[in-house]
Amino acid sequence: MNELKKVKSFSTQEKKSKTLIPYAMLCELTHRCPLSCPYCSNPVELELKSNEISTDLWKTALSDGVNIGILQAHFSGGEPTARKDLEELVNHASKIGLYTNLITSGVLITEDRLKNLYNSGLDHVQVSIQDTDPNNSEKIAGFKGHKKKIETCGLIRKVGLPLTVNAVMHRQNLHNLKNMIELAVDLDAERLEVAQVQYYGWALKNQTAFLPTREQLDIATTIVEEARIKYKGILAIDYVVPDYYAKKPKSCMGGWGRQFLNITPAGKVLPCHAAESLNFLNFDNLKEKSLSWIWEHSESFNRFRGTDWMPEPCRSCDRREIDWGGCRCQAFALTGNADATDPTCEFSPYRNVLEEPLSKAGSKNPDFIYRKYS
Amino acid sequence: MSKLIKLKIDDVPSLPRHAKLRFDHARKKWIINAPERVFELDDIAGEVMQLVNGKDSLNKIIDKLLIRFEGAPREEVTNDVIIMLQSLADKGFLINE
Ligand code: SF4
Ligand code: SF4
Image (cartoon, rainbow over all chains, first blue to last red; front, side, top):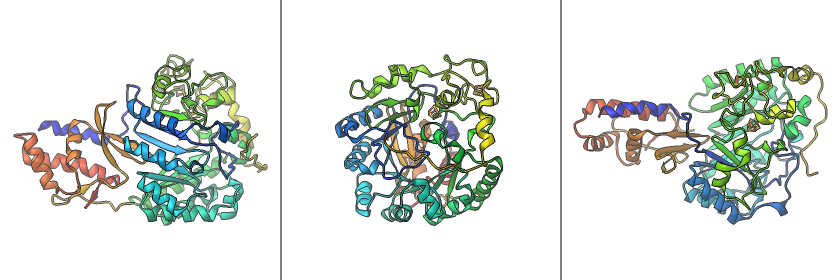
C-alpha cells in the first residue's frame, strides 16, 4: 500500500503536461451582443449572424474535442445566450463528458432559461460586471443593463449554479475594486476574476483610456491581498498584474497550441481568441477540416508551437518553457514582428515600445471607441 | 461557496455539483473537472475518488481500499486518504453529506 504515498501528487493540480493534449475549448457561439465594451476581446472585424455555423457543426466539434482530450467547454461570444440552440449545445457537451461553463453578460437571460440550462447539465456560469457604480458600469458597457446583471447573478445562485464574477479592471474603475470584491461576496459568487485589459483589437484603440497608473495598481494589489485573507474559504480571487507593469510576460494560454483552442462564430479554429490579429496566418475552418486535424496539423497551431520558432533572447532563456516567449498577438501588435520576444519582457529589445503608452497612463480620459460592426 | 470542512473518519464525503469526476481516455487518467481548473489524478487518487460517492463514510471507503490493496496497514492508508481528501476539501471541492 506504499503506493498510496503517490497520492501526494494529487495536490499538485494543473501539472504541466508534456504531451499536447488540450484542456479547454472556447466556443464563441456568436459575435452578436447588446453590449459594446470598448475592451472586447472579439476581433475588430465582427462576424455577422449569417456567417455563424450550424448547431450540428458545433456538436461535431464538441465531440471531436472530447476525443482529443478536451475536458472543458466554455460557451462565450459575443453574448452566447443570443443563440437559441445554447441549451442543445450545453446538453450535448455535458452528455459527452465535457465540463460546461457559460460566459455571459447576463442581460438577456431569464430564470426559465437558466433552469433549462441547469437541467441541460450546465456546470458553471461566469458573469461580467463592468463596475459597481451603475452609471459607470453602463457607460463602459455602452448599455443600460447593470441592474439586470445583478438580478441575473441572484437567479444563477437561486437555480443552484456556481457563479464567478468576471471584472475587467482598468484605470476608470480600479477605485471601486474593494466594492467589487464585496459585491461578489454579496452575490454569493465563489470566484472573482479580476482581469486586466489586454491590449490588442478594440482595447488597443482605447489604451490611453484604460491603462492604469503604477500607483493605482499597487493599491489594487494590496486590496486583493487583504481580501484574500479576509474571505478565505468564501471567495477565491484570481488576480494578475497587467503585463505592461510586470518584468516578465504572462504565459500565452499555457503556450501556443498546447492547452487551448478557440472556435469563432464562423467556425475558424484559433490557438487563441485574438489570433486573427496575426493577419498573415491562415486559420482552418470546421467547414473544411475536423477539429482534431486542425489541432494536430494546421499551419496556425504549429507556427508558434514549442520553442523552435523563438528568436533570442527567448531561445536560450531558461523561462522559455514557462512563459513560452509571451503573447504573440501582443508582440505583433506592438512591434510588427510576430516572432519577437513579447515587449513586456524585461529582456526584450523592444521594451521601449511600452514607454509611450505608459507615459500617457493617467494623463487624460479620452472618449471610448465602442465595439461595433463595421 | 461551500463551507470548508475538516474531515473526520465518520464523515461521508462527496463532490459538490460543480466538481465532476470522470475517466479521460486521451490522458488515460481519472480527472476532476472544476471551474477553471482540472485535477489530474494519479492511479491511487483515481481509485480513492471512485469510492467517494456521497453514501459511504470515510471508514467504509478505507475498508474497501484495504480489500483492494491487500495487506496494507490500516493506519497508514487512513492517514494518506485523509491527507489527500483534505487537500481537495481545503479548495472547496469536497463536501460532507
Ligand atoms: S497570443 Fe496573446 S492574445 Fe493570444 S492567447 Fe496568447 S496571450 Fe492571449
Ligand atoms: S526572454 Fe523570452 S523566455 Fe525569457 S523571460 Fe523573456 S519572454 Fe520569457
